[in-house]
Image (cartoon, rainbow, N blue to C red; front, side, top):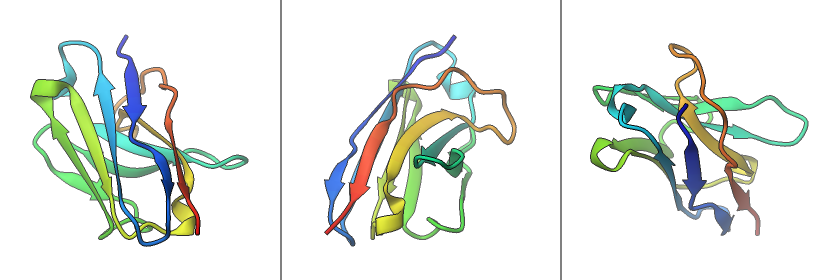
Length: 117
């Protein structure tokens, strides 16, 4: 079982930026397609960005052009650069395998992102 530890969240004003990190345990990280998800209370968790083993990326329409996902296999880490943040980006952000093509591991604790003026 792989464990994920997300970090980098915080309070930011609209238009600001944050960079999230997700450190994964285990030796097979490079074989996984990874993704970032977010969840707000009362709503389902949604996939916002995904990155394949070969580096190909996909984004939800709501974040396309503002968020950028990347990975460092040597560090077992996946990143989410978030720019031009909006109030509606406020959520708890999680990482996991890409659920569109893989089964999920257990969720980590997530990292809170709050966009507020």
